[in-house]
Image 1: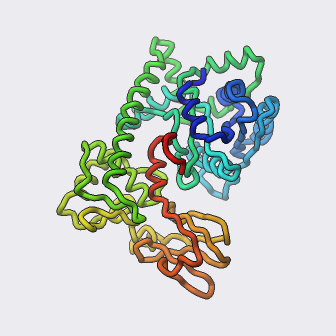
Image 2: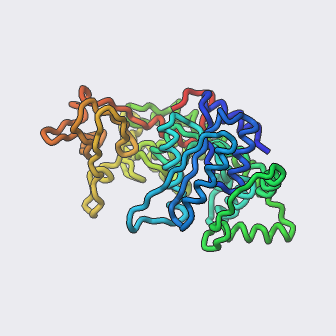
Image 3: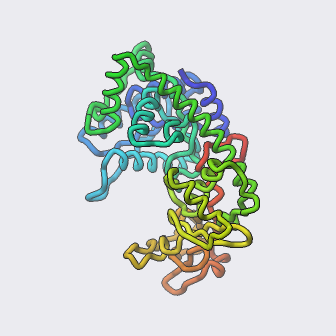
Length: 411
């Protein structure tokens, strides 16, 4: 049931570290845990259970899920989410909070790979949902078998492996029944308030009428292959035409590739320059690329980035107003405390380690949009090198936009 290529790529990426299994206690994730245990052995696995703390009894379910891992001698940790008063607790917000907690745990444990139990049914549902929402062909490629965690900077260097994308949900439950293994049925899976549940119910009706969901999975696989080829070409264009000094600088005389490749590359670069979690809408990219790479272009802003003309090309700087605030009322970035000796990330763009206590990162109008303050002093970026270690993360953010490359050094 496990996809062999995904397993091989996953294990190449781990570099010998254990794989962290995202364990909800549901049938899919419990089956994944059993299958990986049979494939790799308990010593190569860790498990993490996230208690979303959104319904009565969730803590008991989390303990029961953890027990499934303990029964296989797999080390397991329960992470309980906390919610501020009035916080958005919708399904998408819960998903982001879950990924954030898992990634932070993985990093604290020096792990770089999370295995999740997305199935062929999840893939078919995703294709339908994205088609209904007007997705482009790239979106219809569905869920990737190996990708970086879908958030930044928390997901830096952490891969998500989905080795069950070719397996139906019911196959996994049959597997568990044959092993007499228990699992938990999540009541949310029957709640039609959620779009995915409604799509799941409709897909079951369509399957009863003769539609084979595996056809949708095959469509996604073909489009995913096309997307992977596009990503490879975009990555090659960036390597050829872009320098990081430390912000991305595009050489116009080297920016030669088919339009779709240029757009994909620029999308990744914009996201890196903005330190953002999400890339710009794909439907906007052709217009943006034509404008900023035109020889007559004299500067513009988009998606949190200032496009400036420099040295025969275009430099992508962080948009000033997004950092220091705007006259329309948009606030400046809040100061960021810098604990001594601990690396923290400012604005999704710069990893900072303070070499002495009492400092905080603050917005500035300089090129890097960064300065440092204590209760007694203020330092510009140029004055800061003796007191701070700085890593600009644009190259890592570009790499994060693509699938993990197991043939290159890990971020």
